[in-house]
Image 1 (cartoon, helix red, strand yellow):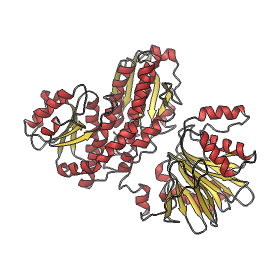
Image 2 (image 1 turned 90 degrees about the horizontal axis):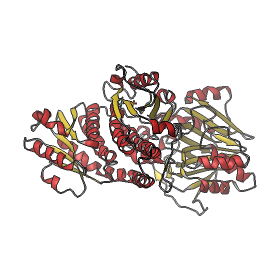
Image 3 (image 1 turned 135 degrees about the horizontal axis):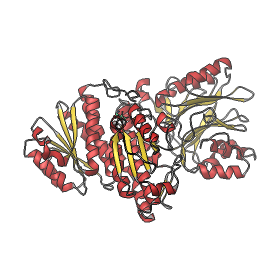
Image 4 (image 1 turned 180 degrees about the vertical axis):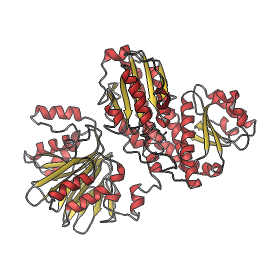
Length: 609
Ligand code: AGP
């Protein structure tokens, strides 16, 4: 996610803003910028790269002033570059933004027809043009911002400065966080608490639709119609380290709980219920190629490979294309049969995994088209691909991948629908229905996260065991694999994911009271089969933790512990089913005292073979 800081007061704006950006570095970014009014004019400095690169520029030309805005950019629209870095300026207006403008294409076209010329690839620049368009006609600064926000569809947290009104700073939020810090004759805006915690502990958490105007002698919060809004001032007691994790104990925990927002951001601007339209910014495949695709090979590692196993179901069902899912470390040494009508899909959170890069290169050398699903804009894998579908999960700091996984699945679902629609396999009606279900996913995930205390209690019962078996079938077999990987990589317990149907071919010999089994037994076309597997485990004194669908009373009679989950659709429930397994692994690891965010021997991105 991008980082925003704003300041108005009697202090050194540059110092306060840069300090604030540094305290937001944990959020991840690829460029940085600052705008300060120096008493006569608005001066902007921006750079691709890190805050230290921006500081080098500022050392040569320090900005002297008492009001300003600053930004660290996590690119979503437009590659990391100086031109795309924020603040974006049009005339006297400069804006920094965190979020996604869903209708930026339409608004950009409208503005260009009115004679506006754009200098960046970003959606953010839209704000500066719209506000400038209004103030140059004499509209009041705040009114111009309110009007602009009513044109926007999507998510935003913005800070806006006007060279012609240097005693006013405006902030607003809808869908992306923005905090107002209250000082003595000075005020702050920030994406997150850490940025301003060293200056004030008096904060107001703005809510969706809030717009705040800051002056040195006070602030006022209004809604989009200009009506006054009253917000409670909160006293923040966190220390800086806790603040970086928004109060969570670990980044992994924070990222598990960010998944509703991460999934929503990944869907925003891409699927449209009314029209059944599905669109991706950097999808360049022409329809003739799509219709001619003979086979898809998915190449990935670890959790991303598990997402690929789920994607196979979607692609074969919605687009009727044969799919193989390969581990990068294996695929790179095969001499794969790849032809021009093959599509190779790379899935990678970091976009830097050496084995996946090597596998994709193998496909590219044989003439296949490369499409990648990445979470990091302009990463190596993104750059080597013909098409890139970005998950908008925001930076994933914890080594154990969580929100990247669920947003990868969602992206694969959208891709499969898009290909199936072009190939005439899924009807317009089916697409609209599936999009409607897909858009319900964030709220279903929100519901599932409410099981956290129950799952922590179950973790207390089992955290001392040394071995676990995770069982699933069909779409839930990859979820069993993923649950086992989560547990083993952060708690160091040996955990194995297995297709439940394979139990009788060997693993059932492992079952006794020392080998707890986690069974993904939610409602599905193979429910009776997995239910039988649970009975087989119980008949051998095994202990079973079952994931089940709300209302399933039968399973209570055989499982030792049950985690009940809502049912959305069989196709989308793997996303829902993965959440309790993330939480279970997290709580077991915390109870075992391991380093949850940086587990031993592991790196967040495996850039070596
Ligand atoms: C998952 O929790 C692990 N951190 C690991 O398996 C990871 O998924 C794998 O290294 C692939 O990383 P990537 O998605 O960045 O390519």
